[in-house]
Length: 458
Ligand SMILES: [Zn+2]
Image (cartoon, rainbow, N blue to C red; front, side):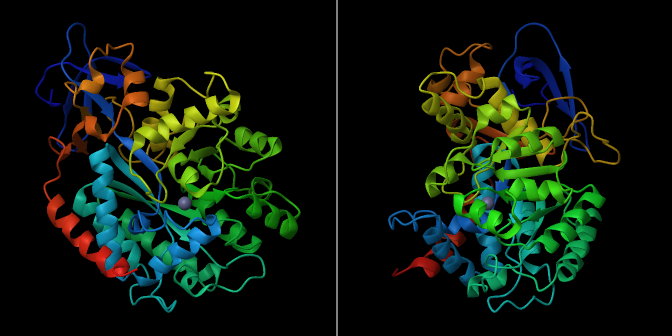
């Protein structure tokens, strides 16, 4: 059962469950050999959470009963963001990352835009808060891509909200200085499970010159580049008013669309924008639990797949942290839209998107046709030479009773939950054992104290 004990296991590879003999080498890479005959246990590649704002874990349960719209929610989020000091960011991030591991996520792309102190002043170490997030990831043992996020303004011609001062830099040069320094630290191996990427917050938060300068820097570095795109209709209207173009059209004109680009949400996109994304090799990250929570709208997953736009999933605001509903909600929304059972994709394809697909969007695995080059151990597949990031499923769980190799993907995607996650390995190290993390009491206790301080009496 446990990889490494020599027995073949039923493992998900290339869209199928098949008997594989799995072992790890000392560097945390997989040796995976296809074998014939009986297999014991069920193993998946680890899920990749391709869009996260870890600090927003503090919002759960405190922003649900007030109605309002996305913009009202954002006000509450700013309240929380204003209160957090570096240690709080570490505690909140650690709680979010722990919950991810328990749910079967072995990696996370952290879209990190909380940079400065509450008054908007850079910390003595300008990357103090990124470091808090990276240390939180290292403490719990999750793989992380830190997407250093550029932010400049409240909107076209709008003054910064006091809370937004924590997110915003005063010039692209200030951003690039901090980002370049952080990239150097990450690439020197200061956090062995970390990689570096760039995010452009949105067309709301960045004027054209910033998008161009920072975006092109990322393109020159061949860095992973993520951006919130077309989450709200008002964002598209403001973009049209300011630039005479829709968000994806603007990003395309600036030369930023490529296989390294991921549009997060991409809900309110036109047919023309879908064509641009599809031709460039860019991908889309769907976050259906957050998008539903915020009333953003529906990701057009079926249309994207038809246009050969790769999909991945994220838990974004962490209203819940669970890969299973992200997969099935993406599919169910398409069925609800069409009024038929013809959705976006089959169960195995959704499982691929949530694992290997996420790893590619985060820059952890070479895309077909991309220059792989100097990349480290690839992630996302149960193949020899890939990182040993994997999930051992609790095969005795009643939810899987009667499943066979042909129906297992369907059982997991439509009937699965984190309850089925028994053991989790990241780079060959077991971080969840029988559903538990060695440090979860301490991590939960510190998070409880933080929540009491933030929300007590409110
Ligand atoms: Zn987001």
